[in-house]
Image (cartoon, rainbow, N blue to C red):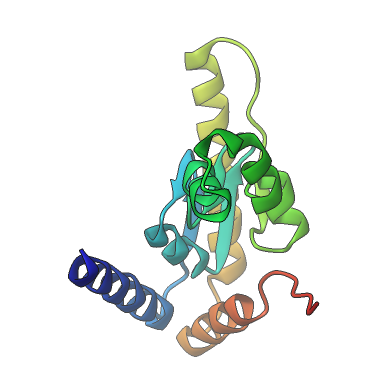
Length: 153
């Protein structure tokens, strides 16, 4: 089992490195439940968008509760501590924008969300179209380096 974790960690790190070197804009969109080490790579984008009801974390709340308290039934408490909602992550500057999800008919809601995503992708591409490849890479690097809020206890 240890061998597999090392390989997965290596693959995640390698993916993040390669993604960070791309000379074109990278737009990451969290649409559901991003809760694995692989979700880390989504953060290496020039822009990170997230649907309002999605979650984004490197570990599921169940996994967090199991590790921290040895009690998977404390999932709700774990989720609150983890700050994995779109609102929380926006406030922590981990993502750039929250995409609203309308209530109502599933198909109608999907179409509205798709339209909002299309608009934001076009807007981002328009903002970045005249930037040099070097500035795109540098912006991504600086954004990733300055993510989140750190408090030393």
